[in-house]
Length: 507
Ligand code: AHR
Image 1 (cartoon, rainbow, N blue to C red):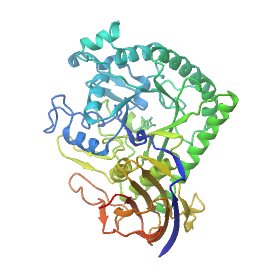
Image 2: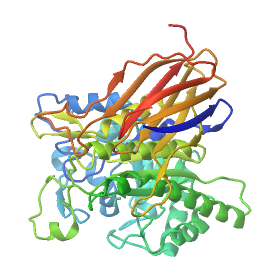
Image 3: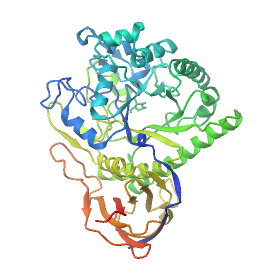
Image 4: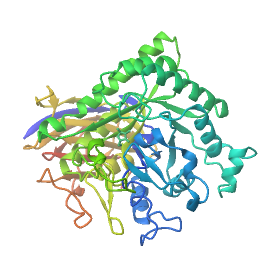
C-alpha cells in the first residue's frame, strides 16, 4: 500500500472557479448535431426536433456554456445559410469534414435550444474564408434588439428577443494548414484585431477569444501566441488552448501522466501572455479558454485522407470514440489540472458534447448512454464550484516513457463557503496499488466526510454502450469518518477517480 500526505488549508486559495470551466462544444460535424442533439422524429424529440433524452443528460451535466458551430467547420461557414424558413435553406459542401451540410439547424435554433438546456451559447465567427463584414452582420442579427435590417430580419424569422450572446471566438485554429483559410500569425493577428475592434463598437461588453495554437505540437507554438497577441492583446479577453490525448501505443502509465503536459501548456501560455502584457505596458491579464480538450484516438474516421475516398454525405458517423475507463482517469486528471489554474483559466469546453469525441453517445432512432468520461465531468461540474485551494502534496512518484517524477496522486480541493462544503478531487494513477491519503485539513473545524464517490474498474479498457451502459459507473463508498483533530486517512483504490465531499453542516 502506498502512502501520500496532503495538506489543505483554507487560505491556500488559487482562485475563484468560473463555472464556464465546465463548458462544452457542439460542431456541425458527423452526428454531433444531426442524430445527436437534433433528431426530428425521434421518440424523445420536442416540438423543435431536439432530442429530449440527450437534453436531459446535458442538463444533468449543468453545462454553463456551449461553443458553436465549430471547430474546423466554422472556417468555411456562411451563417446566413442557417436562418429563415428551413425548407429554403441551401445545402452546401462542408470542406472541413468533406460532408454535406443541410443547414436545418442554425444560430436561432441553436441559441433557443441552449436556453432550454440551461446553457449560454458561445459563438465562433468565420475568419477562414470570411472576415469583418460577415462577423458584424452575424453579431447584429444575433444580438441587436431591433430597428435595423438584420435585427428586424431575426424578428421576422420568429425570434423577437435578441439572443444576447456574450462570448465570441475570433475564428478557429487558423495556425493549422488543414484549416480552410489557414493564415500566418501576422495575417491572423491583423484580421482578428480589426474584426474584434469593430465587434466591440457594436457591443463593448462582448468577451472575445483570440485563437491560440491548435496544439503544443505545432512548430509555431508558442511563437504564434506571442505574435498574434501583439495585435489582439487589447481587444481580446481570452486566448484559446486546444489539446487532445491518445493512448495509441497502449502505454497506460504514460497516458495517465499526460495531464502534466496540460499543466505545462497552461503555464507556457500564461508566460507568453504576460510577456506581451509587459511589452505593451498593459494593465490587463489575458484569461485562458481551453475551448477544446479531451482524449481522442479510438476512431480515426474523419481524417482528411479517409474522407477523400468517400462520397459527400449528410451527417455520417465521424470520430465517434468509445471511451474506456482509463480515458475517464485522464479526463479527471485534466479537470484537476484546470482547477489548479482557476485564477487564469476561466473557460474550458470538452470537445465535443454528443457522439463526436463526446461524453454522450446516441443511436440514431434509438437510445443514449453516458460514456465513461461523462462521470468526472459531471462530478467536477456539480461539486467543483466555489474557490480552488492548492493542496501541498507529498506523493510517491514514477517515471514513464515521456515523463519523470509523475506523482501517483493527482489532487486538488474546492471549497464552497456558500454551501459549507470542501470537496477533494483525487486520481490514483497507480495501476496495482491503492494509496492511503493522509489528509491534514486546516481551517475546516467540525467538517465531516459526507460522501466519497469513486469511479473504479478492474478492466482499464471497459466501456459503456447503449446496450450496456452500466459497466463503468460511480458508486458511493461507505465512508463517514470524522476528522480526528485536523487529520483523516482516506483509501484511494488503485486506478481510481475519487470525489471526497466534506461538509460543515450538521446532519
Ligand atoms: O473537435 C474536433 C476538431 O478538432 C475541431 O473541429 C478542430 O477545431 C480541432 O482540430
